Amino acid sequence: MKKQFLEAGRIVGTHGVRGEMRVEPWCDSAAFLQKLKRLYFDEGRTDAGLLASRVHKSLLLIRLQGVESATQADLYRGRVLYLNRDDVRLPENRYFISDLIGLSVIDDATGVVYGTVREVFETGANNVYRIVNEEGGEFLFPAVDAMIAKTDIDAGELFVRPIPGIFGEEADTLTAGEEDGDAH
Image (cartoon, rainbow, N blue to C red; front, side, top):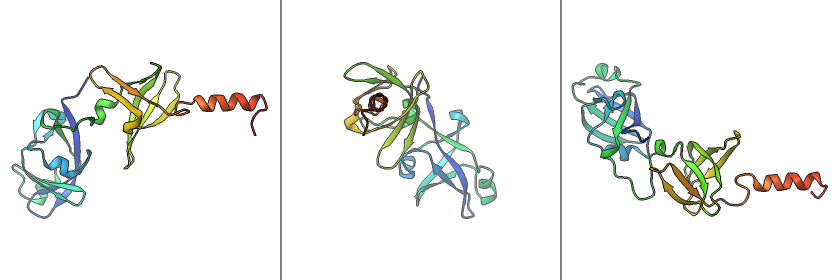
């Protein structure tokens, strides 16, 4: 089930003496967060009272209603901020990481179910999905367009076009060949 409110980042400290706070973004970038007009506390139950935000290096600097000094701002250190998914428009074929966790991974050509997405690693070049099968086997799958056929968040399915060996087929063949004395 999709969560309405998603973790956006954490307040990591103060900036200056007038109550500005530094936010470590847990999304694509501080610039992505800056576009939002509202942020929330308490898993979305409380409006944070966002007055202003600006990007500073890799962080987002924010001012909240009623926070006028560094001492007041420091009381918010460690608090997690949330965004409302309705406030965000994602580009086509882009998804919230929390929506990808739990998807069944299915071979687009054969219908074979390889497992479930358990974790998403952000590597810079492309994301990598950690997929776990029913036997507890783990696989790392590069989330590149050429290998993703279709993502259906509502159905809970991720259709993939794996390269040979990514889910262990070549490893099984190699092991069998070694046992017969065919390995060089």
